[in-house]
Length: 270
Image (cartoon, rainbow, N blue to C red; front, side, top):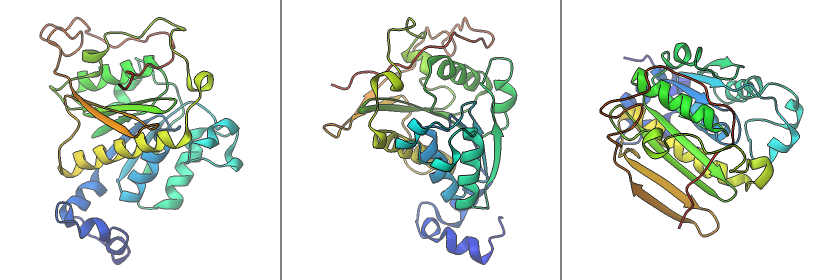
């Protein structure tokens, strides 16, 4: 049983008041370990909401530095941190918000020979990178290690996300491999409405807390898409692909490997 002090009881009182969370659920949150892959547009709101919720350990993996153009959407960072590693900026923002949270940083690009040792330390992974190689690598590592994760992508005014637990639809079930280089524009090329990443990030943070506490229904075998221009949200049922190269009946991928860097794709919202 977690020994709550008076300050923690007050800090987490609105969770404790929830019938479906309560003291037991908050205890699970305080003991949880979550890895955030990406400390940018998506990772910023995820980091802040999970920190506010009291997630015991947050790992942050990102090898980028804060750029002035990031500040239109990456709310974990500020003007004073331009030029600094995003993991350091995010760590300081988390610690200012909630000193209960232990933060571990990985200021490196995740690669096939390092990711497994990092992922295995965590209960849940939140993927919010802006490139295909990282998304596929996170997917493959989590599937191989039996780790649940939430994956998200954004493009201009649109977003999409789903949650994977062992045995459910994975990223490769939907996308076999990255698209050809140059076929999909990056955010720096196509632009993105800043608040859109906030919508997606808060959804992914909510999925994370639901997984930790066991509350509600996760986006398992479902792809949630939205278009902020119309505020239309849509859920598509996507069953696991029996021929999936990583989680199918006869997987052909036996070890982790790295793709060359390309930008991210998103399913168009209809």
